[in-house]
Length: 371
Length: 262
Image 1 (cartoon, rainbow over the protein chains, first blue to last red):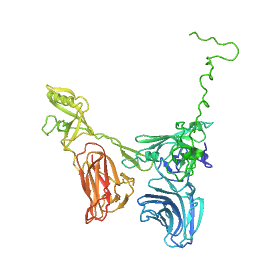
Image 2 (image 1 turned 120 degrees about the vertical axis):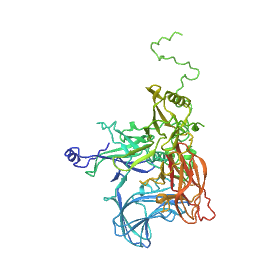
Image 3 (image 1 turned 30 degrees about the vertical axis):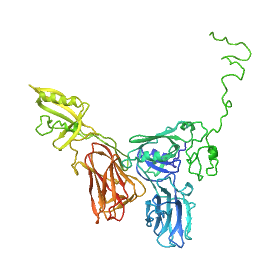
Image 4 (image 1 turned 60 degrees about the vertical axis):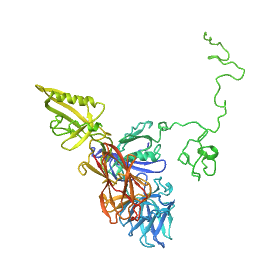
């Protein structure tokens, strides 16, 4: 289990006489790419997952300068966009959505850092996240991270590869410069949901390191609970979780545990999960599965892996091999079991007598039991 | 009609308990707060008020009557009249009334009365503005209190709305739903020339519709009242009907605020 300690931390802490209180920071990425940031001390901290991307632009013939398409919409689709922006240039930047009804947008003046949240209802346009300026060709300079776009409560429509703004489209002839891992990344807001966590047992052979995570399960609207809803909507089993003990005094982490989540357990007022260390596969809990001639994976799930155009699957190999699915390398069914090729029959072959227990070839035989 | 059987129907009844009358509001809200940050709370339980009643220096026959009430309604319920609050509560004695002899033919009696959810009331509470609380569309921390289903909901900031903002939708069959613990409720909303007709249901039963049209925009007011609801966990639902007054120019309905009786 990787443990990261900033240089000089131990020496510094040893001289503080306990004058520090670590904050638990938990960064989670579920199997469908959704990210969560939780803490036991609500606030803004540097994220483990995300570094800011610096984007600079100049020139261009229209106000829209950089965009990423999230696909078509139909009228009535509920669209949501979130992105964190630090405007370090001299001109205003406007985040647009296009597909939302009336194209609601958010304006970030120079010098402001903002977590942009835009909700709207589509009028049927193309759904996209775009960087706009107030006048055509105006130069701008921002640090941005964590672009999220969802439609009707879907997972993030921005693919992982494009969340660093790589592959975005320059519009109207604008000259775009993208600098990755820019060192003044804006901070991420960590929800104060953690009741306890980070109780890892560190053994010498790293075979039993695991922790228990306990979250509140009260927040949400009067009907749905936030945590339970997240567990319900996303694949937390096996989700990648990084737990850090963060010292605000130092602005650094003194412990860092990389884990996978398992055994989620939402209860009435709290929810728990087990944090299994990445190095010990014996602690992975694999759900029981059946041996069948049809695949047991949910179609288009991460385990299935199909990205084809088909909208349903009959779960047979022939369906999996079809050009509209093409995920046969992950097909998990046992296609055919030929009788007697796997199991040895309890009796001998045709015309042979059953072997008595203890019978061996040659040598003295054990006496048969008296009947 | 057990709720019509009132232990102490009048101020003159010999069954009125003696003062002082300690009573307990059971905790029905689950709360938690991180070491730093917002507090989280949620209605978790449905429990009614509990009174530790006592009758001091009453005739032994009063004890016998109380014992009879306990035995009669051990598997049933009756009403207790809180004279000071002018409210009736449906419930039963938790255990057998206990007594001690205080003097010749005089006893001190104690008994615990518990309000039980889900029972009919002799008179449903209607002291709005005193015993009621408001559930807005969002709480003060910015989190939704109402569950929105459908694609048309959007938050509108307008002084006429209760609390200055409300969710609005004009999409047919869009639903806004609150859950609360208490008795009846009142639906609060503004009226305007672009508003349509909203349908209101409680625990799956449609109660009626409200026409939100008004030629001039009017401030939020109690537009629909449901008094007769027993103590319990209730779901009140608003549905955009996609219908409107002939004078209205749109079908918009408001998920603004619910005033619920506790």
